[in-house]
Length: 319
Image (tube, rainbow, N blue to C red; front, side):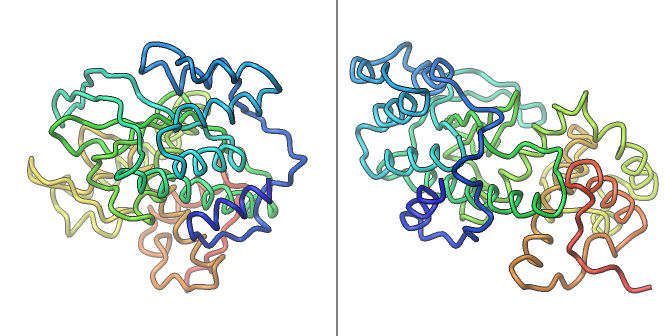
């Protein structure tokens, strides 16, 4: 797997600490089997194409590698990226079937499958680079303490929202759906941070019900007692991320009334990732989130202890 990671980084020109990669002998805990891979890759088309008929022999990894080649057969560069990504992180990248979607405050949306090839291949590049970076980060964190967290072996589905640019991604049931027309997906960094956010949602849902509601709900409600939901100046010190949703008065995404504490928690996990990664790469966090308010410090400790072994590389706040 280290060899595959080196190949992928070369193809993507990504800077990843190879010492953070999983060793080649590590057995995947959540490996996707060939039957599931066929669903991920070809269910949007209604069935397995004849070109994939040759992919029924060999062990699971051999079959899935072959299936990925069949899915991306029309773009050799995309096929290489998808296959290297699978070899490195266990992620299988396919298509989301056509469907209507209740977007809550976004309204009703229509999704269509959209393969990230040729002129849209950049989205596959960004996705692959993000998942490799995420794997390297959490693998490095795990050398300091055991993590109760899953960050590999995902079912990834690509789609396009018709005449809309939202949502950029959806996380449900250990699946990440990626919108090639998503408004957030304009750079490698924004894709990486969005995927960190979505991966937290999956872990939050998988932790015997939503952990965020039980653990962070009281803190979240205290913040909203202090600040009106549309008072950006009051909310700013408590917002883990700077994204603001316009309309309905406008507010930080973490405090959108229709979102609730789960989005605050996912943004907190993203902020944790960004700050810890900055320190890991030798940088300095100028104003750590945990040092801004008492509520931030409480939430930060709860998150780190529940999912990340209590690890916190960010220096302690000045007394």
